[in-house]
Image (cartoon, rainbow, N blue to C red; front, side, top):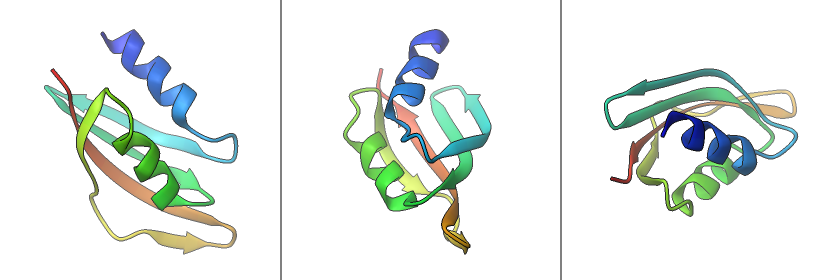
Length: 77
């Protein structure tokens, strides 16, 4: 299951984004990272069959051309 989850995240993320932290606690996934569009990352995760209840865990912070994000999602069972 974890390998499938990591594969899905890797395939979803655009080339201009990267994660600084990935944490899985029971059925909750916590992602931190940078992207040119944090809202775009959120939308990609929302449209994935792996995740539900996807939302930002804190405000998005702009740093130059990148945005810092913290996203929480519940895994579909």
